Amino acid sequence: MRLNGFTKHPKIVIIGGGFGGIELVKSLKKLDGEIILIDRHNYHTFQPLLYQVATGSLQAESIAFPLRKVFNDQKNLTYVYANVLNINSDSNTITTSDGEVSYDYLVLATGSDTNFFGNDQIKHYTMPMKNITEALNLRSMILQNFEAAFVEEDPEKKQALLNFVIVGGGPTGVELSGAIAEFRNHVLAKDYPEHKKEDVKVYLIEGKTELLAAMSPEASSHAKEDLKKMGVEISNDVHVKSYDGELLTIDNGQTIRTKTVIWAAGVKGELPAGFKPGSVTKTNRVQVDTINRVHGYQNIFAIGDAAAMITLETPMGHPGVAPVAIQQGKQLGENLLKIIKGQDTKPFIYKDKGSLATIGKNKAVADLGKIHLHGFIAWIIWIFVHLMSLVGFTNRLIVFLSWASSYLTYNGETRLIIRRFNTKEMKVDPDGN
Ligand SMILES: Cc1cc2nc3c(=O)[nH]c(=O)nc-3n(C[C@H](O)[C@H](O)[C@H](O)COP(=O)(O)OP(=O)(O)OC[C@H]3O[C@@H](n4cnc5c(N)ncnc54)[C@H](O)[C@@H]3O)c2cc1C
Image (cartoon, rainbow, N blue to C red; front, top):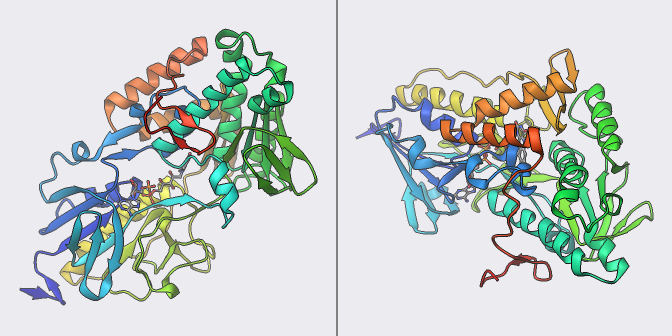
Protein backbone atom coordinates (compact mmCIF):
# COMPACT_ATOMS: atom_id res chain seq x y z
CA MET A 1 0.00 0.00 0.00
CA ARG A 2 1.29 3.47 -0.88
CA LEU A 3 1.11 6.57 1.31
CA ASN A 4 2.16 9.93 -0.19
CA GLY A 5 3.72 7.92 -2.98
CA PHE A 6 5.64 5.66 -0.59
CA THR A 7 4.86 2.41 1.17
CA LYS A 8 3.07 2.56 4.53
CA HIS A 9 6.03 0.80 6.10
CA PRO A 10 8.71 2.84 4.42
CA LYS A 11 12.19 1.64 3.72
CA ILE A 12 14.85 4.18 4.61
CA VAL A 13 18.33 3.50 3.25
CA ILE A 14 21.19 5.33 4.97
CA ILE A 15 24.65 5.36 3.39
CA GLY A 16 27.35 5.88 6.01
CA GLY A 17 27.64 4.87 9.66
CA GLY A 18 29.70 7.86 10.78
CA PHE A 19 28.70 10.49 13.32
CA GLY A 20 25.61 11.57 11.36
CA GLY A 21 24.46 8.13 10.21
CA ILE A 22 24.59 6.62 13.70
CA GLU A 23 22.60 9.45 15.23
CA LEU A 24 20.03 9.25 12.45
CA VAL A 25 19.51 5.51 12.93
CA LYS A 26 19.05 6.03 16.68
CA SER A 27 16.46 8.77 16.16
CA LEU A 28 14.49 6.44 13.86
CA LYS A 29 14.05 3.85 16.61
CA LYS A 30 10.27 4.36 16.54
CA LEU A 31 10.01 3.99 12.76
CA ASP A 32 7.34 1.49 11.78
CA GLY A 33 9.31 0.41 8.75
CA GLU A 34 12.71 -0.79 7.69
CA ILE A 35 16.11 0.90 7.96
CA ILE A 36 19.06 -0.33 5.91
CA LEU A 37 22.43 1.11 6.99
CA ILE A 38 25.17 0.57 4.40
CA ASP A 39 28.83 1.29 5.13
CA ARG A 40 32.00 0.09 3.40
CA HIS A 41 33.61 -0.25 6.83
CA ASN A 42 32.01 -2.51 9.41
CA TYR A 43 32.94 -0.03 12.11
CA HIS A 44 32.44 3.60 13.09
CA THR A 45 35.64 5.67 13.14
CA PHE A 46 36.31 8.38 15.70
CA GLN A 47 38.28 10.60 13.32
CA PRO A 48 39.34 13.28 15.85
CA LEU A 49 41.84 10.79 17.33
CA LEU A 50 43.26 9.44 14.06
CA TYR A 51 46.38 11.55 14.54
CA GLN A 52 47.17 9.63 17.75
CA VAL A 53 46.94 6.34 15.82
CA ALA A 54 49.23 7.80 13.12
CA THR A 55 51.82 8.86 15.68
CA GLY A 56 51.75 5.63 17.70
CA SER A 57 49.96 6.87 20.83
CA LEU A 58 46.75 4.87 20.44
CA GLN A 59 45.93 1.51 18.91
CA ALA A 60 43.60 1.69 15.92
CA GLU A 61 40.93 -0.54 17.49
CA SER A 62 40.46 1.86 20.40
CA ILE A 63 39.02 4.58 18.14
CA ALA A 64 36.71 2.30 16.15
CA PHE A 65 33.51 0.49 17.09
CA PRO A 66 31.68 -2.31 15.20
CA LEU A 67 28.49 -0.97 13.62
CA ARG A 68 26.56 -4.19 14.20
CA LYS A 69 27.31 -3.88 17.93
CA VAL A 70 26.13 -0.25 18.07
CA PHE A 71 22.67 -1.38 16.93
CA ASN A 72 22.36 -4.77 18.63
CA ASP A 73 19.05 -3.73 20.17
CA GLN A 74 17.48 -1.87 17.26
CA LYS A 75 15.13 -4.33 15.61
CA ASN A 76 14.08 -2.17 12.63
CA LEU A 77 17.70 -1.93 11.40
CA THR A 78 19.67 -4.10 9.00
CA TYR A 79 23.36 -3.37 8.49
CA VAL A 80 24.93 -4.10 5.08
CA TYR A 81 28.71 -4.18 4.53
CA ALA A 82 29.08 -2.74 1.02
CA ASN A 83 30.43 0.15 -0.98
CA VAL A 84 27.79 2.34 -2.59
CA LEU A 85 28.76 3.20 -6.14
CA ASN A 86 25.79 4.92 -7.77
CA ILE A 87 22.49 6.60 -6.98
CA ASN A 88 19.76 5.74 -9.51
CA SER A 89 17.06 8.22 -8.53
CA ASP A 90 14.82 7.37 -11.51
CA SER A 91 14.27 3.87 -10.17
CA ASN A 92 14.68 4.70 -6.42
CA THR A 93 17.61 2.30 -6.20
CA ILE A 94 21.30 2.44 -5.43
CA THR A 95 24.02 0.30 -6.94
CA THR A 96 26.40 -1.19 -4.40
CA SER A 97 29.48 -3.39 -4.72
CA ASP A 98 27.14 -6.29 -3.91
CA GLY A 99 24.09 -5.49 -6.04
CA GLU A 100 21.13 -3.13 -6.11
CA VAL A 101 19.13 -1.90 -3.12
CA SER A 102 15.78 -0.13 -3.42
CA TYR A 103 14.61 2.66 -1.14
CA ASP A 104 11.62 4.83 -0.37
CA TYR A 105 13.83 7.43 1.29
CA LEU A 106 17.58 7.69 0.84
CA VAL A 107 19.95 9.50 3.21
CA LEU A 108 23.53 10.24 2.30
CA ALA A 109 25.81 10.40 5.36
CA THR A 110 29.04 9.59 3.52
CA GLY A 111 31.28 12.25 5.08
CA SER A 112 34.26 13.74 3.28
CA ASP A 113 37.57 12.84 1.70
CA THR A 114 40.93 14.56 1.28
CA ASN A 115 41.00 17.32 -1.33
CA PHE A 116 44.21 17.46 -3.38
CA PHE A 117 42.72 20.22 -5.55
CA GLY A 118 43.29 18.22 -8.74
CA ASN A 119 47.07 17.91 -8.29
CA ASP A 120 47.84 14.26 -9.16
CA GLN A 121 51.51 14.45 -8.19
CA ILE A 122 50.67 15.72 -4.71
CA LYS A 123 47.91 13.10 -4.44
CA HIS A 124 50.38 10.35 -5.28
CA TYR A 125 53.28 11.35 -3.05
CA THR A 126 51.70 12.89 0.04
CA MET A 127 50.02 11.06 2.91
CA PRO A 128 46.36 11.81 3.66
CA MET A 129 44.79 10.90 7.01
CA LYS A 130 41.01 10.53 6.74
CA ASN A 131 40.51 6.96 7.91
CA ILE A 132 42.13 4.20 9.95
CA THR A 133 43.90 2.60 6.98
CA GLU A 134 45.54 5.91 6.09
CA ALA A 135 46.50 6.58 9.72
CA LEU A 136 48.15 3.15 9.92
CA ASN A 137 49.98 3.80 6.63
CA LEU A 138 51.24 7.05 8.07
CA ARG A 139 52.36 5.36 11.28
CA SER A 140 54.34 2.81 9.25
CA MET A 141 55.87 5.50 7.08
CA ILE A 142 56.97 7.71 9.99
CA LEU A 143 58.55 4.76 11.84
CA GLN A 144 60.09 3.30 8.67
CA ASN A 145 61.73 6.64 7.90
CA PHE A 146 63.27 6.77 11.39
CA GLU A 147 64.57 3.23 10.85
CA ALA A 148 65.86 4.04 7.33
CA ALA A 149 67.63 7.14 8.63
CA PHE A 150 69.50 4.89 11.09
CA VAL A 151 71.18 2.95 8.26
CA GLU A 152 71.46 5.80 5.71
CA GLU A 153 75.03 7.02 5.27
CA ASP A 154 74.46 9.89 2.84
CA PRO A 155 73.86 12.97 5.08
CA GLU A 156 71.47 14.63 2.62
CA LYS A 157 69.33 11.52 2.24
CA LYS A 158 69.40 10.98 6.01
CA GLN A 159 68.14 14.51 6.60
CA ALA A 160 65.32 14.00 4.07
CA LEU A 161 64.20 10.97 6.11
CA LEU A 162 64.20 13.08 9.28
CA ASN A 163 62.31 16.05 7.82
CA PHE A 164 58.56 15.82 8.44
CA VAL A 165 56.31 18.27 6.62
CA ILE A 166 52.66 18.81 7.43
CA VAL A 167 50.65 20.86 4.94
CA GLY A 168 47.54 22.52 6.36
CA GLY A 169 47.33 24.44 9.63
CA GLY A 170 43.76 23.55 10.61
CA PRO A 171 43.07 21.36 13.68
CA THR A 172 44.41 18.18 12.00
CA GLY A 173 47.68 19.83 10.90
CA VAL A 174 48.18 21.50 14.28
CA GLU A 175 47.48 18.27 16.20
CA LEU A 176 49.72 16.18 13.94
CA SER A 177 52.66 18.58 14.00
CA GLY A 178 52.36 18.85 17.79
CA ALA A 179 52.31 15.04 18.12
CA ILE A 180 55.35 14.55 15.86
CA ALA A 181 57.21 17.31 17.73
CA GLU A 182 56.42 15.56 21.03
CA PHE A 183 57.69 12.30 19.54
CA ARG A 184 60.92 14.06 18.62
CA ASN A 185 61.22 15.80 22.01
CA HIS A 186 60.36 12.85 24.27
CA VAL A 187 60.41 9.49 22.48
CA LEU A 188 63.37 9.83 20.13
CA ALA A 189 66.08 9.68 22.81
CA LYS A 190 64.56 6.45 24.20
CA ASP A 191 63.69 4.60 20.98
CA TYR A 192 66.23 6.05 18.56
CA PRO A 193 69.21 7.24 20.63
CA GLU A 194 71.28 7.27 17.42
CA HIS A 195 69.29 10.28 16.08
CA LYS A 196 69.97 13.69 17.56
CA LYS A 197 66.87 15.67 18.54
CA GLU A 198 67.98 18.73 16.57
CA ASP A 199 68.34 16.63 13.40
CA VAL A 200 64.63 15.86 13.32
CA LYS A 201 62.69 18.77 11.80
CA VAL A 202 58.95 19.32 11.85
CA TYR A 203 57.57 21.86 9.36
CA LEU A 204 53.98 23.14 9.30
CA ILE A 205 52.89 24.95 6.14
CA GLU A 206 49.63 26.91 5.99
CA GLY A 207 48.17 29.00 3.18
CA LYS A 208 46.25 31.38 5.44
CA THR A 209 47.89 34.07 7.55
CA GLU A 210 47.10 32.21 10.80
CA LEU A 211 46.83 28.65 12.07
CA LEU A 212 43.39 27.37 13.15
CA ALA A 213 41.75 30.03 10.98
CA ALA A 214 38.24 28.81 11.87
CA MET A 215 38.89 29.46 15.57
CA SER A 216 39.33 32.74 17.49
CA PRO A 217 42.45 34.93 17.04
CA GLU A 218 43.35 34.01 20.65
CA ALA A 219 43.28 30.29 19.84
CA SER A 220 45.30 30.83 16.65
CA SER A 221 48.06 32.78 18.36
CA HIS A 222 48.30 30.43 21.38
CA ALA A 223 48.53 27.42 19.07
CA LYS A 224 51.31 29.08 17.08
CA GLU A 225 53.20 30.11 20.19
CA ASP A 226 52.98 26.61 21.70
CA LEU A 227 54.04 24.86 18.50
CA LYS A 228 57.00 27.20 18.08
CA LYS A 229 58.11 26.47 21.65
CA MET A 230 57.92 22.77 20.81
CA GLY A 231 60.26 23.37 17.87
CA VAL A 232 57.81 23.27 14.95
CA GLU A 233 58.91 25.51 12.06
CA ILE A 234 55.75 27.30 10.88
CA SER A 235 55.26 29.03 7.53
CA ASN A 236 52.04 31.01 7.07
CA ASP A 237 50.65 32.63 3.93
CA VAL A 238 52.48 30.23 1.59
CA HIS A 239 51.35 27.35 -0.64
CA VAL A 240 52.96 24.12 -1.74
CA LYS A 241 53.73 24.26 -5.46
CA SER A 242 54.97 20.72 -6.01
CA TYR A 243 56.29 17.58 -4.35
CA ASP A 244 57.89 14.72 -6.28
CA GLY A 245 58.51 12.32 -3.40
CA GLU A 246 61.93 13.91 -2.70
CA LEU A 247 61.71 17.69 -2.94
CA LEU A 248 58.90 19.94 -1.72
CA THR A 249 58.70 23.35 -3.34
CA ILE A 250 56.81 26.24 -1.75
CA ASP A 251 55.59 29.33 -3.62
CA ASN A 252 57.91 31.61 -1.60
CA GLY A 253 60.88 29.87 -3.25
CA GLN A 254 61.73 27.68 -0.24
CA THR A 255 62.47 24.01 -0.88
CA ILE A 256 62.56 21.16 1.65
CA ARG A 257 64.13 17.79 0.93
CA THR A 258 61.81 15.34 2.66
CA LYS A 259 60.49 11.78 2.49
CA THR A 260 57.34 12.53 4.52
CA VAL A 261 54.69 15.03 3.50
CA ILE A 262 51.33 14.81 5.25
CA TRP A 263 48.47 16.46 3.39
CA ALA A 264 45.93 18.04 5.76
CA ALA A 265 45.16 21.00 3.53
CA GLY A 266 41.61 20.41 2.40
CA VAL A 267 38.52 18.25 2.29
CA LYS A 268 35.74 17.63 -0.21
CA GLY A 269 32.47 15.76 0.04
CA GLU A 270 32.59 12.00 -0.47
CA LEU A 271 29.74 11.23 -2.87
CA PRO A 272 28.67 8.19 -4.87
CA ALA A 273 28.08 8.93 -8.56
CA GLY A 274 24.67 9.75 -9.99
CA PHE A 275 23.73 13.16 -8.60
CA LYS A 276 22.55 15.84 -11.02
CA PRO A 277 25.46 18.30 -11.52
CA GLY A 278 23.31 21.21 -10.29
CA SER A 279 22.93 19.57 -6.86
CA VAL A 280 26.68 19.35 -6.20
CA THR A 281 28.80 22.29 -4.96
CA LYS A 282 32.39 23.14 -5.94
CA THR A 283 33.65 21.26 -2.88
CA ASN A 284 31.68 18.18 -3.94
CA ARG A 285 29.00 18.40 -1.27
CA VAL A 286 25.32 18.00 -2.17
CA GLN A 287 23.29 21.12 -1.65
CA VAL A 288 20.42 20.64 0.79
CA ASP A 289 17.52 22.76 2.03
CA THR A 290 16.85 23.53 5.69
CA ILE A 291 15.44 20.04 6.34
CA ASN A 292 18.47 18.40 4.65
CA ARG A 293 16.58 17.45 1.49
CA VAL A 294 18.90 17.41 -1.55
CA HIS A 295 18.07 20.09 -4.13
CA GLY A 296 16.22 18.61 -7.09
CA TYR A 297 15.05 15.44 -5.28
CA GLN A 298 11.93 14.64 -3.26
CA ASN A 299 13.06 11.62 -1.28
CA ILE A 300 16.87 11.99 -1.06
CA PHE A 301 18.47 13.69 1.95
CA ALA A 302 22.05 14.37 3.02
CA ILE A 303 23.63 15.18 6.40
CA GLY A 304 27.04 15.99 7.89
CA ASP A 305 30.18 16.58 5.85
CA ALA A 306 28.53 15.39 2.61
CA ALA A 307 25.85 18.10 2.80
CA ALA A 308 26.02 21.85 2.19
CA MET A 309 23.09 23.73 3.72
CA ILE A 310 23.64 27.09 2.06
CA THR A 311 21.66 29.90 3.69
CA LEU A 312 22.25 33.60 4.38
CA GLU A 313 23.75 32.67 7.76
CA THR A 314 25.83 29.82 6.32
CA PRO A 315 26.88 30.89 2.79
CA MET A 316 29.52 28.12 2.62
CA GLY A 317 27.37 25.52 4.41
CA HIS A 318 28.07 24.40 7.97
CA PRO A 319 31.60 23.54 9.13
CA GLY A 320 32.72 19.94 8.59
CA VAL A 321 32.69 18.95 12.25
CA ALA A 322 31.14 16.08 14.18
CA PRO A 323 28.52 18.13 16.11
CA VAL A 324 26.96 19.34 12.83
CA ALA A 325 26.65 15.74 11.57
CA ILE A 326 25.28 14.54 14.93
CA GLN A 327 22.69 17.33 15.22
CA GLN A 328 21.60 16.98 11.58
CA GLY A 329 21.29 13.20 11.97
CA LYS A 330 19.08 13.58 15.03
CA GLN A 331 16.87 16.24 13.52
CA LEU A 332 16.50 14.51 10.15
CA GLY A 333 15.32 11.38 11.97
CA GLU A 334 12.61 13.40 13.70
CA ASN A 335 11.67 15.13 10.43
CA LEU A 336 11.49 11.86 8.47
CA LEU A 337 9.04 10.47 11.03
CA LYS A 338 6.97 13.65 10.56
CA ILE A 339 7.14 13.48 6.75
CA ILE A 340 5.94 9.88 6.84
CA LYS A 341 2.99 10.89 9.05
CA GLY A 342 2.25 13.92 6.83
CA GLN A 343 3.13 16.40 9.62
CA ASP A 344 5.05 19.71 9.41
CA THR A 345 8.84 19.49 9.59
CA LYS A 346 11.24 21.64 11.60
CA PRO A 347 14.15 23.51 9.94
CA PHE A 348 17.66 22.71 11.14
CA ILE A 349 19.42 25.28 13.31
CA TYR A 350 22.99 24.47 14.36
CA LYS A 351 23.78 24.84 18.05
CA ASP A 352 27.51 25.59 18.11
CA LYS A 353 28.84 24.54 21.52
CA GLY A 354 32.42 25.62 20.74
CA SER A 355 35.67 24.39 19.22
CA LEU A 356 38.69 22.64 20.65
CA ALA A 357 42.14 21.73 19.37
CA THR A 358 45.02 20.12 21.20
CA ILE A 359 48.67 20.92 20.61
CA GLY A 360 50.38 18.56 23.03
CA LYS A 361 50.56 17.47 26.65
CA ASN A 362 48.93 20.15 28.85
CA LYS A 363 48.47 22.32 25.77
CA ALA A 364 45.17 22.95 23.99
CA VAL A 365 42.94 25.81 22.91
CA ALA A 366 39.19 26.10 23.43
CA ASP A 367 36.63 28.61 22.13
CA LEU A 368 33.47 28.26 24.19
CA GLY A 369 31.24 31.10 23.01
CA LYS A 370 32.91 34.30 24.19
CA ILE A 371 35.23 32.38 26.51
CA HIS A 372 38.68 31.51 25.13
CA LEU A 373 40.80 29.10 27.12
CA HIS A 374 44.25 27.72 26.54
CA GLY A 375 46.84 25.57 28.28
CA PHE A 376 46.05 22.97 30.93
CA ILE A 377 42.35 23.84 31.46
CA ALA A 378 41.62 23.67 27.73
CA TRP A 379 43.53 20.38 27.55
CA ILE A 380 41.47 18.83 30.36
CA ILE A 381 38.26 19.94 28.60
CA TRP A 382 39.59 18.43 25.33
CA ILE A 383 40.34 15.14 27.11
CA PHE A 384 36.93 14.99 28.76
CA VAL A 385 35.00 15.85 25.56
CA HIS A 386 36.91 13.31 23.46
CA LEU A 387 36.65 10.51 26.02
CA MET A 388 32.92 11.03 26.41
CA SER A 389 32.36 11.20 22.63
CA LEU A 390 34.05 7.85 21.94
CA VAL A 391 31.62 5.03 21.19
CA GLY A 392 31.81 2.11 23.64
CA PHE A 393 32.85 1.82 27.27
CA THR A 394 35.84 -0.43 26.50
CA ASN A 395 37.21 2.09 24.01
CA ARG A 396 36.88 4.88 26.56
CA LEU A 397 38.71 2.80 29.15
CA ILE A 398 41.53 1.80 26.76
CA VAL A 399 42.02 5.37 25.55
CA PHE A 400 41.93 6.71 29.11
CA LEU A 401 44.54 4.18 30.26
CA SER A 402 46.74 4.83 27.20
CA TRP A 403 46.60 8.56 27.85
CA ALA A 404 47.29 8.14 31.56
CA SER A 405 50.32 5.97 30.76
CA SER A 406 51.58 8.37 28.06
CA TYR A 407 51.07 11.31 30.41
CA LEU A 408 53.40 9.76 32.93
CA THR A 409 55.94 8.16 30.60
CA TYR A 410 55.44 9.41 26.99
CA ASN A 411 56.02 5.77 26.20
CA GLY A 412 53.08 4.19 24.37
CA GLU A 413 53.36 0.66 23.02
CA THR A 414 51.83 1.07 19.57
CA ARG A 415 54.92 2.10 17.65
CA LEU A 416 54.68 -0.96 15.41
CA ILE A 417 55.33 -1.30 11.68
CA ILE A 418 52.74 -3.99 11.08
CA ARG A 419 52.22 -3.35 7.38
CA ARG A 420 55.35 -2.11 5.60
CA PHE A 421 54.51 0.93 3.48
CA ASN A 422 56.25 1.03 0.11
CA THR A 423 57.41 4.65 -0.15
CA LYS A 424 58.16 4.39 -3.87
CA GLU A 425 54.80 2.93 -4.88
CA MET A 426 53.08 4.80 -2.04
CA LYS A 427 51.06 1.76 -0.99
CA VAL A 428 51.29 -1.12 1.45
CA ASP A 429 53.53 -3.96 0.25
CA PRO A 430 51.11 -6.73 -0.78
CA ASP A 431 53.18 -9.53 0.75
CA GLY A 432 53.47 -7.60 4.00
CA ASN A 433 57.28 -7.80 4.09
C1 LIG B 1 41.78 13.74 11.13
C2 LIG B 1 40.45 14.34 11.47
C3 LIG B 1 40.27 15.01 12.66
C4 LIG B 1 39.04 15.58 12.98
N1 LIG B 1 38.89 16.21 14.19
C5 LIG B 1 37.68 16.69 14.54
C6 LIG B 1 37.47 17.27 15.83
O1 LIG B 1 38.40 17.36 16.64
N2 LIG B 1 36.22 17.72 16.14
C7 LIG B 1 35.18 17.62 15.25
O2 LIG B 1 34.07 18.02 15.58
N3 LIG B 1 35.35 17.11 14.04
C8 LIG B 1 36.57 16.62 13.65
N4 LIG B 1 36.74 16.07 12.41
C9 LIG B 1 35.63 16.11 11.46
C10 LIG B 1 34.61 15.02 11.78
O3 LIG B 1 35.25 13.78 11.93
C11 LIG B 1 33.60 14.99 10.64
O4 LIG B 1 32.98 16.25 10.55
C12 LIG B 1 32.53 13.93 10.90
O5 LIG B 1 33.12 12.64 10.91
C13 LIG B 1 31.45 13.99 9.82
O6 LIG B 1 30.49 13.00 10.11
P1 LIG B 1 29.69 12.33 8.92
O7 LIG B 1 28.68 11.46 9.58
O8 LIG B 1 29.24 13.35 7.96
O9 LIG B 1 30.77 11.44 8.16
P2 LIG B 1 31.80 10.35 8.71
O10 LIG B 1 31.85 10.33 10.18
O11 LIG B 1 33.06 10.60 7.96
O12 LIG B 1 31.16 8.97 8.21
C14 LIG B 1 31.03 8.67 6.86
C15 LIG B 1 30.83 7.17 6.73
O13 LIG B 1 30.39 6.89 5.42
C16 LIG B 1 31.04 5.75 4.92
N5 LIG B 1 31.05 5.86 3.46
C17 LIG B 1 31.51 6.88 2.71
N6 LIG B 1 31.28 6.66 1.40
C18 LIG B 1 30.67 5.47 1.33
C19 LIG B 1 30.19 4.68 0.23
N7 LIG B 1 30.28 5.12 -1.03
N8 LIG B 1 29.65 3.47 0.49
C20 LIG B 1 29.54 3.01 1.77
N9 LIG B 1 29.97 3.72 2.84
C21 LIG B 1 30.52 4.93 2.62
C22 LIG B 1 32.42 5.79 5.55
O14 LIG B 1 32.99 4.49 5.61
C23 LIG B 1 32.11 6.36 6.93
O15 LIG B 1 31.89 5.35 7.89
C24 LIG B 1 37.97 15.48 12.07
C25 LIG B 1 38.15 14.81 10.85
C26 LIG B 1 39.37 14.24 10.56
C27 LIG B 1 39.56 13.50 9.26
